[in-house]
Length: 158
Image (cartoon, rainbow, N blue to C red):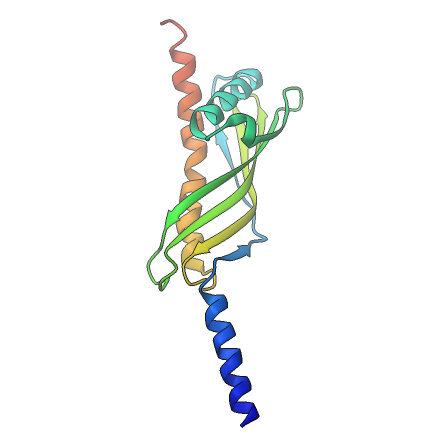
């Protein structure tokens, strides 16, 4: 009888804890290089800061470190994603991350690390499908940043 009561109590605890949000950290780093031809390190650095200011809620809150001489910008971001196929009743997912932009003449290296998923809903565990949903968004930042820098350099003669 005691074992049955103990199993029932453990079951209730598991159900209750499953109804709260769940944080899942990821060891993986997503990193890639984007060519930005005909732009100096300084032009790309300035353009990247403008892009961050225009695309994140607060550039001051996002940027944790910047060094023009080294060509490095490091900041934090968070993205919200809808529930992906096969995710049960998780609801939605937020992914927070650290973004590092290493800048040289004619190119940048974007790196995303300290990825942390937080589910609202039942707290079902992180899956490969979730990662597949997040990665394209992070991979699109390089192209958007390059397009923004190209557009800004062409709009100097307004």
